[in-house]
Image (cartoon, rainbow, N blue to C red):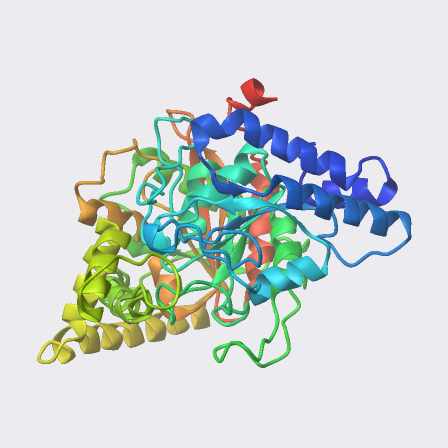
Length: 487
């Protein structure tokens, strides 16, 4: 049961071959056996999960069916606000904070009778690519516990890969869903900006953040997105138009589609095994009837620099609210200023502090135009070049990350090297376009390789269509070898 897909679990629940309580107990049992090694969760909601599972079983028994997530064990990244369950964003400044409300995405899942297994570990305030920046300790990759799971949604990716949840939800600001999904051998999807409400997502960079699902299959990703997408008046940036049909042409294959391979997302810095897996996958798409062409998007080379000015600038403004006055950590001081200074110094970790300082500097008088303003101009160029590319092709493809999972501690002293882990994923956050990572093989160290598919705004249907074709052609079925130990 711990290895069920969402589709399999939903079918089993409805035909009565398994109960939600059994599914939930299986997920909690897997977590109990694996957590000492993986540290995927910051909070395991044992009592609440079992209570929700029993409520779901009662609903099924009485003929009530609230939706696809009724009775399904789910793991939520710990920057998604949950009423009655501690939400820390993996930061000491929010340690022990229990929100009085649910975020919109969480509320929509609860309306369908979801079972929240727990809140997962992340890089503090979602700032990182390895889940090593958590104030509560790093997480480890279920394929090899000496390796990172990716970040910042590493805990959710681990939970799905290890069987502690059927589905995970995370946030993606510069690749924080797709990159850990790639490193953990699961499917991770970032929707079009505004398609899923950000209300109740603890903000990192508001113009970049987006909530999305981590699943075991592409079909499950579609179902998960359907459950949480849609306009929300509580989010001023929420998309107001009709929700696109995510399943349009889902099983149609790629014959007749034009697929662009991004030239700038290959070559130096990309591991040979990663590039080989991407080439094999592109060849399979060509064999399936797609027209494959190379596409140049020159601004990709400077997108990383633009991102690491825009995101820290927005984070410096968003994190100003954590001041010790209203909630969270509070340190003593003789004046309000001293109290705030002491609180923030003790409450924020080194990576968060680094980004606040960088962002504040970029926004400061005399430097705004040279740094933040220039970065926004570069962002506009990135958007225009991607829009031009989508006039030539239906989707763009690349590796999800330039490497497979790297060793824990190998990049913590070199921030630039860590930032380069997001080179493939950042452009879709700058543009606001949807993107998905699908596992397509293992490298020589038996670590998963992710294949990224990008589509234009509201192009989720063609995105899922190509992702489904990749999934069928590659037939990736490998599972972390440690699952045998924890079964």
